[in-house]
Length: 210
Image 1: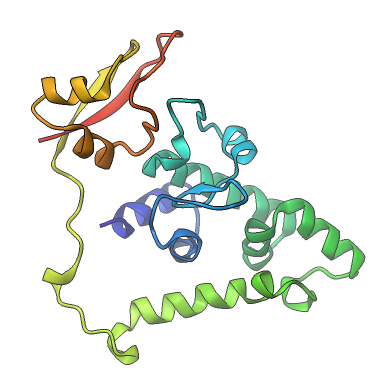
Image 2 (image 1 turned 135 degrees about the horizontal axis):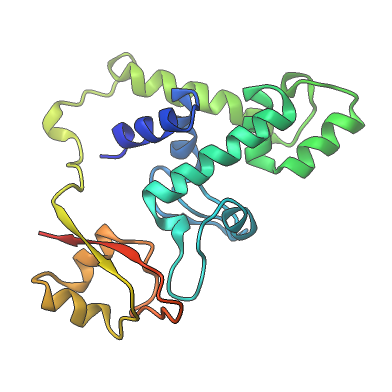
């Protein structure tokens, strides 16, 4: 359902393919919300989302936008890699924040994630990704027997409409286009309100289920 597109977007941003498993570790590939305020498939905090170009308002939260949040997460990971010098360090920094990573490296006079004494979650985080990779790439070895028909279908039965004005009711919008509010939100989870306030005239691409 999601991994082929994540693979494409990570490749587009020059990221190693294995980082698709980070989204699974973060959210189980659900548009989740944490107690700390991280949201979406990649569990991005508001300030980080805005820093990497995501719109977050009362009616739109692009941390829930699959393509845009994946690109933002990839750019963030690339910046962490550049800052900390290795993908393992970048992975740990993604989990606990760049500021905390810098603090631990400095205080412990170390250069590597594998030498750091960290909290339980972060100390296990990298190895959790490795475990997820092994299980998902070799499911039968771990007792998971899945046939093609067991997989989730792709959300690819839609057309795209450009919206450059406010929308008073997404329910009415959906009904006028032969669908319903529920399916509109399935295809556009980043529309977080029942209406869209668009005073600036920004153009949004909205997926209309067929």
